[in-house]
Length: 316
Length: 283
Image (cartoon, rainbow over all chains, first blue to last red; front, side):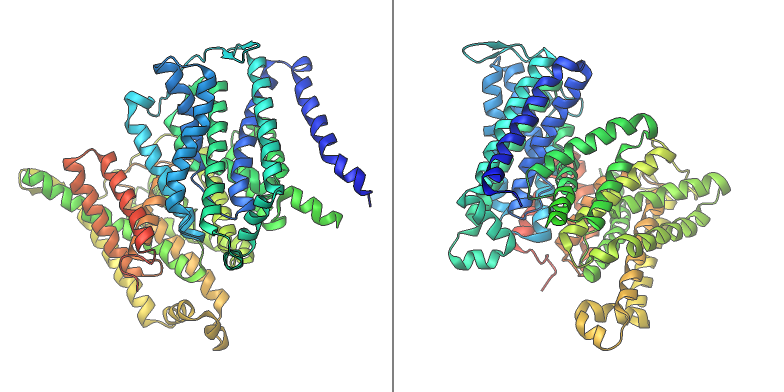
């Protein structure tokens, strides 16, 4: 056993190390890997936002794609059509999806289990149907291509047409979001979330307003899913109604389950591993969904707690 | 106008009966195994894809109607025995697991069948006059076959020993075990039956819509809608709901854009979920 002092230092050390390695990548690898890692980071953020609602509160939402897609449009439409800056676009990519999540969540958290899953799918389906039809605003399935203006940070202007700058911006935002979520799930609020997941009835009897806590988690998860969508759109310079489709939520579900739901680090790991696997297999098989599906199913059967859960279980 | 309306009503009934078959399969599996089968749409798609191959090889649609559902039934058997059996008591896990199965089946179809949509020639090419329009005879035949399958299913559930067992397991699983009903076998055959129904409706739908590896994705959600509005575990609720929703959607699409009709039916379903989660026809 490690002394407690070491244990407390383990996370900051590991976090700084991983962040440093990721920050060093642009000095050693070419632009392709920077683009690839940008994408991994964005999906990792999407996966941890899903982990908050599924891994900690126990609500299986297949509707996160709605917030992801909305976040994308919240960046693309104001910059493209209203001439707003990228900074306000990014703020909107949290605020707009969070507002929608408050609306969707208000109704959804009244339901539990399977009914909750289905109502979130339906809300996302309404979103993608509207998005695909309202082409004058969204560009439909063809989407909107746009050029994000430089991000004004006061001390510096970030040119987002530059791949390396975008990579660092995404890395910084994802790292901060990770720390934010980690702090939250370890706070008393996080304990209430877990209490609801473990036994909703008991949490209610103790006196917690279960619906309000669920709604809070849903709104935060929605806002962060939106941020992921906003960053995705910024890095691709492209937003599309296809991002709103409920099946896009499947990415987050797969990464979280395979990596280990309810651990935060697991979904990040899951996103990295599966996207690397997809990347190396795409030339070999051209059938990435086959591998993703097979990995997902075998994880559920062989290591239901995911990779992280499996490793933790063995250590005990 | 009258002829358009008549066509829309007929189409609505035909499509409603096909949807009813799909929803019945989903509902049977849910009622017994408590599994929300996200792969159900993919099984429907496989039925259509297999039938396309059989028709390519033999040119016989009716042979395809027999062979394709059996082949998909075998796949269902393998899925239930190999994968789902161990996680049957965890609803959320089975949702995610069948989602993974859906990804695999869709990708397999894309790899071998290809990404382009293909059409199946009408096995009965005739048309009959309907006001000033012509309506394909085949669609009426398809509707009749769907209805016949539903009658057969009713007879199976109410007049055979296996049907009795299935109803017993739905009513009280523990009591069924105590009385010596082989519950696991009932689970297995129910899943197979559900898969066969999905595939069968896939073959029936194939001459109407084009065969495409993604054809099951939206159908899956429609089937969910029907099962929930009609009441989970309530088979006849599903049949009525399927026909009514399909009629409303078909006739409504004459007056408003189809996507508006879709949004309204989705909104209606949210309302049902919130106000009557047991379904309109549930107790």
